[in-house]
Image 1 (tube, protein in one colour):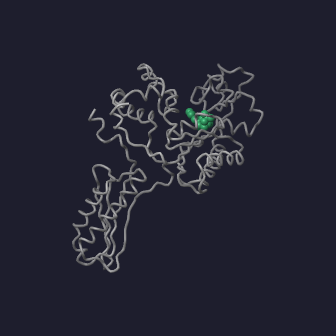
Image 2 (cartoon, rainbow, N blue to C red):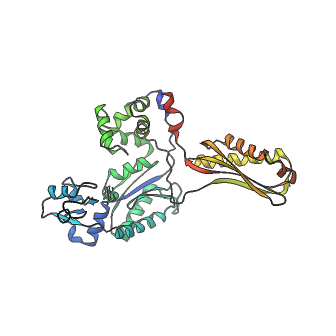
Image 3 (cartoon, rainbow, N blue to C red):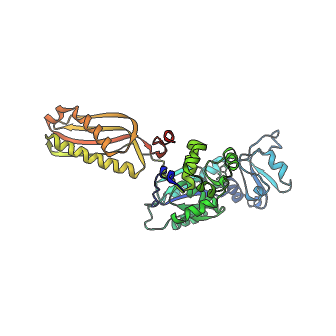
Amino acid sequence: MNNSENLLPKQDIHRRIIHLDMDAFYASVEMRDNPSLKNKALVIAHDPRKHNGHGVITTANYIARRYGVGSAMPAIKAVKKIPQDKLVFVEPNFQKYRAVSKQVHDIMHEITDIVEPISLDEAYLDVTKNKLGSYTAIELGNYMQAEIYKRTGLTCSFGATYNKFLAKMASEYAKPFGKTVILPEEALDFLAKQDIKNFPGVGKKTQNSLRELGINTGKDLQEKSVEFLIGKFKKWGYSLAMHSRGIDLSPVKSDRVRKSIGKERTFEPSIFNQQKALTNLRKYSDEVSKILIEKNLSAKCIVLKVRDSNFNTVTRRRMLKQATRNEKIIFQEARDLFLALPEFLDRGIRLLGVSTTNLEQTHYAEVNLFDTL
Ligand code: TTP
Ligand code: MG
């Protein structure tokens, strides 16, 4: 690995992230409710023999998968590939799957509210801090796996590690009823051994382009320089470089999204001194910046709030061209907004606040990287 490795951000390895995914979800629900389906090749789709050959497979149980049948294929393929005496079609029953999904999500929320649902059967959890206390990620994963089985009769798999994409690769690694924990020091080895098709977002097309370049595994990606991968695949190459090196800073975005982050304080007695007001603004800007960094967010809008001793309150906001989380920039904007309101200082300031809104996830790739190569 050469100097262009510096183009990649540093990974925080202290987060604990779990990716949980139900095994053959729709098919498992149907087998649970009708055990006679268990030794059949079960395909969840409209039966194409009754629908003029139409129908798409939502999912198939593991027996059907052995015949090469899977999600998103035309249902008619199952008819061609699976012996008639083995094959059973069941129509999807979404109401039922939604009800099970709710039970599963309730169990996840017993551990943390930082849950990012991806689909009915899949979610990321940030368990760095969690409601159950000092359990390891694997213990928390075991708890969910056991509770889900107890309450729904279904199995799931989970992956636990320090970021999202790796947690997803880990949960897929040992399906079904799997548990895979990847410690930070094991990540590069784990990734080196993976086929490129297991990396997130690598579809048929990318797979082909990569294979043409002789890149077939994570190890091959690790051996290519970041510069090379960006040169060949632009933003996509950057993301491949990040992933093959085990880097992904994206936060688990819980259903409840924070809309603003701010700090404010009331003064008794009121402040008349400009320097004192500015010193406080500076302090709040620093604190706001710290929280933004902690949450991997940047803000496009800086808001100043001021109240005078007559309880007149105003908020003034400024939109930025580029989102920021830098304490100096936040302060500069807040200060400019404040200095444009001299009458408040004359009347005495009772409350001062700095907040940031229009929050977005911080993207490192955007630091002019593509212009410099
Ligand atoms: P997946 O988790 O992708 O698949 P799965 O749970 O059936 O199997 P695995 O054990 O590999 O996780 O998707 C969850 C459910 O979403 C799946 O049971 C059916 C539905 N689905 C579709 O309807 N269409 C699709 O193309 C895919 C991929 C899934
Ligand atoms: Mg699944």
